[in-house]
Length: 294
Ligand code: SAM
Image 1: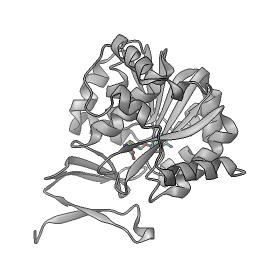
Image 2 (image 1 turned 120 degrees about the vertical axis):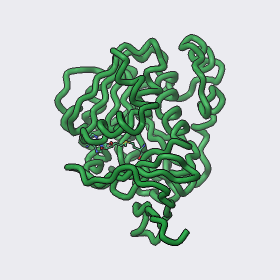
Image 3 (image 1 turned 30 degrees about the vertical axis):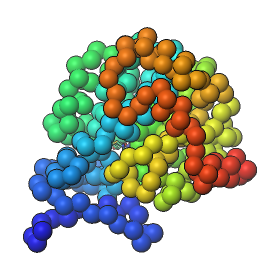
């Protein structure tokens, strides 16, 4: 392995933890106007995208996060027609959302045009079907500015952001969540990339504290994503209707059948429901957030 470049995830260095991936080939590396971007090939995880030292997507395990961040809110909602993605640069979530033929319009607000351009070239498996779909519109803007100003209303908002550093930090603030609530239609739901509770407990507690103050229903659900290291990843849940996350697997299965029963590799109606059953230490973080005075 001598002479091989190892690329480190530096996100957790302040906590004394780092993982590194052998780069068999670096395909692209640049500093965009917003962040450091590197794409490389790794023998185990395939093509890997890192932004500012945080793993964003790998071709080996992307399906887990992309399926769980899209099918859970859309099938829980049941009548989603207008969907907003904030962030989402690699277009993996957009690809999953567009599998729902009842979705009339999908808007993606991404701050960094370089990530979009780059995804079109290096992640064609996601980006090609997305940019061919007439329902899709990509806006290059800060997600905070967009949700604060738009007159549009959305049934589902998916915050597929980087971690709370650099341009992503604003997407973890009370102001951003309040602006998202403003542009959620009645009965709407927002889900958020909310980190790995075992390593980033404060991030989840802070977000859920804001959700509790702003939404009728605040919680999270989990999935195990190998390259989001540290155990379960939490996806924040903020809804205007408390019933949305309490549907049975039977109800969700019926909606999935009507949506066309498209193939999945992680999400199933049973996994959908089970994802809201939290390990005790994560449930304790949710309870702590609900006691907090954010
Ligand atoms: N799945 C990844 C994860 O869990 O960390 C995130 C994928 S996607 C690459 C994250 C995107 O959020 C990036 O393309 C980044 O440019 C974008 N982003 C960061 N801050 C933003 C902001 N304030 N407004 C809009 N997009 C933003």
